[in-house]
Each structure stands twice: as structure tokens, then as C-alpha cells.
Amino acid sequence: MSTETKTTKNGSRGIVDSFTEWSLNWVPDSMVFVLVLTVIVYLMGLGLTKHGPMDLIDDYAKGFWLLLTFAMQMTIMMITGFVVADSKLVKSGIVKLVDWPKTAKSTMIMFCLVVGIVAWMHWGIGLMLSIVMCKEIAVRKRGMGIHFPLLAGASYCVMVIMANGPSQAAPLLAATPGNFLEKTIGGLIPLTQTALSPFLLTFMLVQLFCLPIILVLLMPKKENAVEIDEATFKEYTYVQPKAVDTASLRPAERWERSRILPTAVAAVMLIWVGKFFVVNGVSKLDLNVINFSFFALGLLLHGTPHSFIASVRQGVNTTFGVIIQFPMYAGIFGIISFSGLASIITHWFISISTPGTYAWVVFAYTAFMDFFVPSGGSKFVIEAPYIIPAGQALGVPVHHIINAYSTGGQLANNIQPFWALPFLAAYKLKFQDILPYTFAIFLVSGILGTIAFLLFPMGL
Image (cartoon, rainbow, N blue to C red; front, side, top):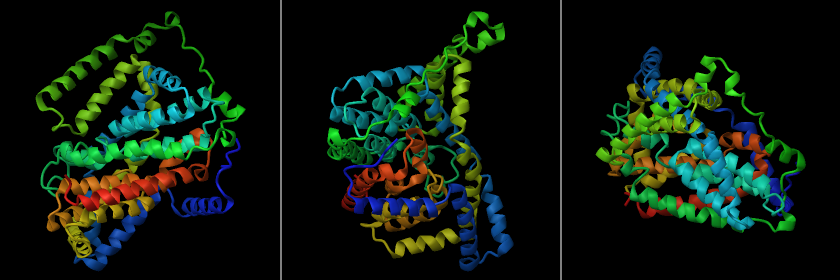
């Protein structure tokens, strides 16, 4: 498919290509980052603390297994998000939504709002929904003049910007009882002070309002739009073979395709979820409750063990990074926390900040670091031991530090190819094709974040 952006001048296109090429050449896989970070933190410990070579290895080993529970929680969250979005009911609902708007601009607005709201609720579902809905729009609105690289860019940047909601790792970790950072952060921080706080909810609503406006303004005229070609159209419209008739199956295979057990178990689980909210409201919502809820929804929506497990098998492919890298991040956490390195870095942050600027410093620092270390929240484990004490020393509330941290991390993803890879593979595009649009969102969101954290350094 030809994806040359006709509305972009050669000079600016060259800058975009050069930036993307540099990023793809020099920003490696996240596994490389965690190995490099391990070496850097170890050398920092040798040079800045009193712990010797073997002491630091002991610190690493002591911390290595601290993230087992958190790693499993994040793995379940990613899988259940995929499973819910992969269900037939959700996919049929997507088709109805796509057919509703009748113009290119109204389609773009609907797409941004739906993906943004769902991604805010659960980034895993938002990721799958964004890709599926983008493909459906490209197919069902073909001929309407919707520029496909812009649509693909909107699919990615709206999802990552709006994913700063209650399914983000940092606020969920802070709200979950028994987490290993509970002493560092001074107890539990409920989601009503982070992802569900008045400050962050207002900020996210402003972004949700601005994103579709910007993307609509960036839409080229119909005659300049590049749509999907015939080969991609055929790929997107391929129909899977029909399922086997259950009457010809063995009894065990029929049980695998029966709705009785999954529906009954899901119903009981959802009854408990309803009871939880009636008794506790949203203030006690944590990672375990969210996972429990989406696990039940996945069972209910798929209906049969066969469909559920088939979807889980696909979803597991998205979790390998969490499973293998979280123990290594925990080891780095061990060096930072147990060697005394955290106190040294804390003083560095205090020296360059004031109570009025610290939240913005964290916002900017995280955006910068997450471009080079796209960790999906796991990096918070090694940074919390110094960014939170520094903020506490300056009188900045812990929950607002977490808000700044998670917001900055999402900002960086707009110009970082790492998280865009599954989108690019699905759309048969290069990062150069969507970067002009995601970069525009990066600039606007960066300005909004700067204004928000400088005007409200302590939150609302």
C-alpha cells in the first residue's frame, strides 16, 4: 500500500524520517534497557554508596522476587483486557458504532471519543478496540476520503494518551494492599486520589475534548486522502471458517463448547463485584478487584471454555515482557533501596526543584526517561524509592507525584515506536507514516500537562 503523505512537504517529511530512523536505530527492545539499567545502577551503587560488589549483588538478589505478585496481577490484567475486547459481542458492537456516523469528520470524532473512553477504563481493552475499530472504519468507510495514516495515528495516540486511567500500573500498585512499596509511599493511596481524582479526571476530559478537534483539523481533503488498497481490504474482510457443529463432537468436546459452567461462574463473580461496590464504593478499588471483574466479563462474553481459552492463548503473547522483566526490575529496586542509593538520588531531585515545580519536574523527567525506557509502568518500581521521598520532603502530596509520573509516561509514548509496533503490524504502515500526527498530539498534550502541573503543583 502506498502510504506517502501528500499533504506533508518534503523538508518536514525528511525531518520525520530522520527522527524515526534514529529512534528505530538507537532505541532497542525493553529487554536491552533493563539489562543496561542493571549495570548502570550497580555501578552507581559502587561509586556512590558504602556497599561493596558482593553487598550490591546481595541487594539485587534480595529484591529480585519482590515483584512476583505484581507481575502476575499485571499479566492477568493484560490478558483479561485482550479477552474482553476479543469477544464476538464486543466486535459486533464495534461494527454498529462504525456504521452510525455518516461523514468522515463525524467518524473521526466518534472513533476518538469511544477509543479514548474505553482506553481510560482499561488500556488493554482500549488497545484491542482501537485496532479492531480502525480496521472496520478503513473497510466500511472506504471511499469516504478518510486518510488511513491519520486514522492509524489517531488509533495509536488517542489510546496511549487516554490510557492514563484506573488500569495504569503506578496508581493501581499504590492502591493495592500488601504492595512492596507500601512503606515507601506511606500507606495505600486510593484511586480516588490518583486516576479518579478531580485533578486527573479534569485533565483527561480536557484532553478527550481536544484530541478529536486536533485530528479533524489535520484531516486532508478527500482528493488528497490515502485509503487502504485492495490487498489490505481483502485481508481485513477475510471471514474465518464456521465453527464445527457441536452435534458431531464427543461429550468432552461438547462440554468445552457449553455455556453453562462459564456463565454460572461469571454470574457468581459479578455478583461479588456488585456487592463490593455497594459496600465500598470506588474508594477501595484496586488491581485485584479490576482483574476479578474483567476475568468474569471475559468468561461471560465468550460463553464457552473453548472460546475463552482460545482468546487467552492469543492474549498471553502480549505478556512475555512483564513476566520475564519484572523480576529484573525488582532486582534493580533492591539495589536502589537496600544500598542507600535512593537517598542520594532523592537529594538530587530536591536540589533542582521547589514545591511549586516538583510535580512538573516529575512529569517532564518521566516523559524524557520513558522515551528511552518504554517500560509500561514497571519502571515506577525503581523510581518510586527516590521521586516520592523527594516530593514528600518538598511537601508535595504523594498522590500528585503519582499523577505527574503516570501522565508524563503516557506523553512520551506518542513519539516512541516501541508501543506502536502492534498497531503498525496490524495496519501495514511504518512509524514515519503516523508520526506527523502523533507528534502533533505530543506537543499539545505536553503543553496541557505543563500548564496543569505548574498551575496546580499540589493538585486540586
